Length: 542
Image (tube, rainbow, N blue to C red; front, side, top):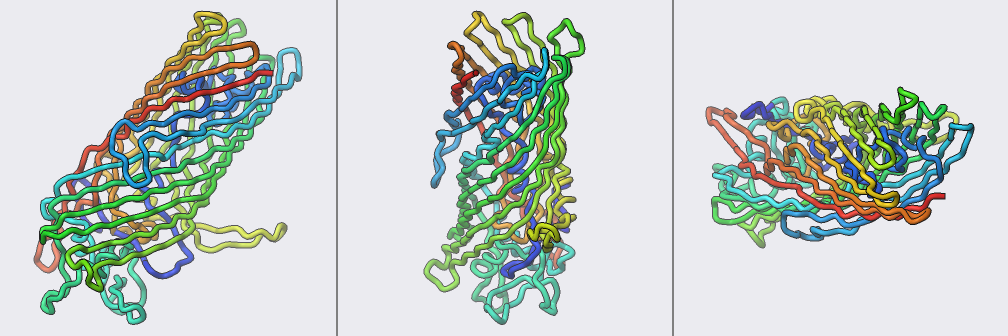
């Protein structure tokens, strides 16, 4: 294990270039898939999503499905709009403004008694929109990405986060082994390590065959795109218009893509560049159950509570990553590339919510919601084989917890609290004005970092060294709605603001190897993820 400043710690994981049946993923990559954007119908977004006790909006199907029990009529709605990034510059296939299809769904309402209803709902909504461009640049003061790989090769011992470098007799490539007997690849030898140890680090000096090149400064650009689509099926109802119950079965569809370019201007006067193209696809399943109670018969005041199971994801990630060493441009070993694809699992943590709602006459509605989700409990799973179901003949993957990576997740991520507030005012029967606010506490510890020496398959397949410790999110929303007979048209505006600290690689401090002390300190860069959303919903009640 590498010792890092401010409790940041550093270990790298992996057997590379060999097809392996057991696979997992890395903490910072996993974190991109958890949590949800504020999205849905324009009414829901306009009120900041604080409708888990107020109900009667299709978007509560994925948070508190008991909210669908307040429908008295069947309803259909469809939503779409624009997502606009405020900061950054366009890069590769990334655009700062993107159209988005965000929601389509409906509720079928049936009366079962004088004051009781049984309702069935289906809704699709975009749970996460990955469209975002990240730009960063800063000085390096002699540190570099290739120096990180070089230090690991000097460490040798896999238990310290290193590996023993030697030639693979079959490919003639430099490979990191777990011991001097070369019986197995080290779990600390990553794809990035492979690229550097076969391009930039080897020298033509027989007395010093391997060396690093320090960096003066770096530039980094990444274009993210894709989404997680939520398909929710729900049944809900009420008991005597006092107690409302609901359950939702959710299916998630994951499509994540990112292309990045990282370049360092080296002390030698040349440049090294890494291009990384990564995708994550797959599906997940979860269940949500909720209740809303109107404790006082003569009052519209409502209390809601709900719980969501982990989302059980089955995922596939693939990458193509290349490195060009411009010091030797045109030489046989100036560039290399690797590609990989593997399957793994993630189980997200449980989610709990509590909400309050109240209406004053027919002109004012107030909502408040609190949610809690402990992201340090993300369970990264290694696919270790499979089995055939005796009754159905179907094949299923089996998995075990990636203990090393899960321990790292507990060091880097923490529990998140979300507060949602919303208000709706109707100056006339047909016109509604809305406003909302969200505060989402940080998911990351401020001193967290990637650990490139973990003995985990997740880091063994890592093709990038950068990470961002994102801070709290603040969302501000406004909305307006108009009812025309059985039709409604709603418009919402959302502004979301978040800042973070970007690092091109992990910090290493005071590593002593053969009486020489090594440091490799990455200079952090302040980055922002500020975006605006315009959302339009068309609805019909019948």
